[in-house]
Amino acid sequence: MTIKDIFDSMDYGPALEATTEARAWLDRHGATFGHWIDGRFTAPEAGFETKNPATGQRLATISQGSAATVDAAVSAARRAFPKWSKTPGHQRARILYALARLVQKHARLLAVLETMDNGKPIRESRDIDVPLVARHFSYHAGLAQLLATEQPDMAPLGVCGAVIPWNFPLLMLAWKVAPALGRGCPKAS
Amino acid sequence: MTAQQATPAQSISHLPQLAHARNPGMALDLDWVASVQANTSAIERRCASLGGRRSVKKDWQAAWLLKAITLIDLTTLSGDDTPGRVQRLCAKARQPVRAEMLEALGLPGLTVGAVCVYHDMVETAVRALKGTSIPVAAVSTGFPAGLSPWHLRVQEIRESVAAGAREIDIVISRRHVLTGNWQALYDEMCEMREACGEAHVKAILATGELGTLRNVARASLVCMMAGADFIKTSTGKESVNATLPVSLTMIRAIRDYQDRTGVKVGYKPAGGIAKAKDALLYLALMKDELGLPWLQPDLFRFGASSLLGDIERQLEHHLTGQYSAGYRHAMG
Image 1 (cartoon, each protein chain N blue to C red):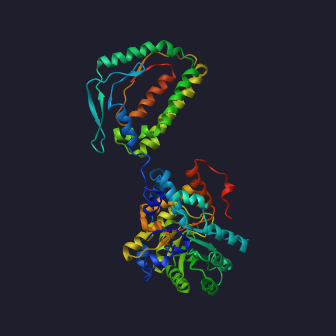
Image 2 (cartoon, each protein chain N blue to C red):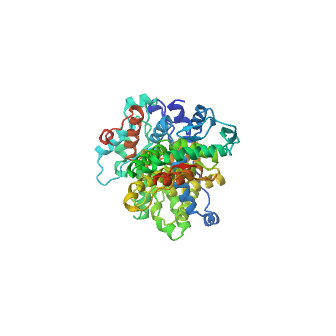
Image 3 (cartoon, rainbow over the protein chains, first blue to last red):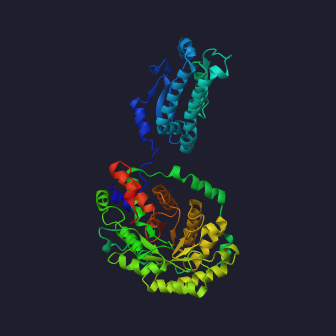
């Protein structure tokens, strides 16, 4: 369409939150996902489909975790614990701020994916969920820098496990991962 | 109905008379007026979310901004207006954006919708716009307060029409709305419409002075019943002028009137629309609520002046990727 065409028809054009980018991202990953353990995706195992509740369209195949998967994740986290728990607060903060910034940078993709996967309206995922995810990482980054002086008697205990509900997938992940990492506890979730 | 074509002289589409039948008005229906309500919190919520729901970018934004230009009533209503200022404004109306930019965008010869001035400047504006089909609109009837002697208010309309104004923006007596005297409002609107003759009349409600959205909705309806061609939010001189909630209220009244009578009445928000981004929001609102006919100059106008400069700046950014300094988009 030329500008003159649009001038006559006054079309809106593609929505910023169209699913094109998200579907392209899924395709680049072959629409099949393993688990993120020890800093990389594992090879996909037998899994189940996740569908877009609004359309019924298949989005991807996700690996079904087993006891072995959990063991592997916890072991990896335990291996990371000595180094991570001794990482100074300011260094932990830099990493958490980087995570917050990356969430902001890819906010639209994350919001659209969240809506496609979970079914919540884009207005919620774009305006509430994803901004809150970034804010939680920022908040705990800030807190990490203060813990040494504010709570000198506290120490990281070890690996934390977290259970994420269905209704705020990304946000509940952030709520649990950010504080744990901020306090020097590696996470298996 | 197509919008402005290649040369201004050929462009006639913004003459209101040619697009659709004029509002013939109807008898005052007090039951209908009494039944009108406005759900303020729902209206406000819908307007607050509009920016997030309707976002227009890239080529679409450029096209929408060009359309917005064709819908501007380029206005100067200052006590210190001079013939020179009006002439410069009319030059800007003829060439609202630099010619090479319009060429690059594929819409050479684009002009604004109209020029809006006080009575004393009508003749100057008509002369300065000769050879174009850009109409001159005159504010009238004791603008902005509308509290001068009644017979002089009506006479002012006749004199502006005689001077060459093809559109008249009248102001209503706000006290009729505030005291619920719908008959008085209807009568005065009828008389003002009659004095306009062939010229089209926009009824300025001064929504910032009407108190409630329900009053705005009722006043809109009464003015339409009395034959207004356009209903307009404000003079631009009130403390609160055009807002999205007031616009949504008036637009819904226009839709109700069309549903019951089949007649299309135009809408003009005026005052406080200075940014290109705001213009896009208003266009999205019109498109959503009333549809494509209300995105044309015969049914929609922006009462604005500095808006044009901001639109030009956005168009330049679209073409070059850079934001220019404000002084490169002077008003004349």
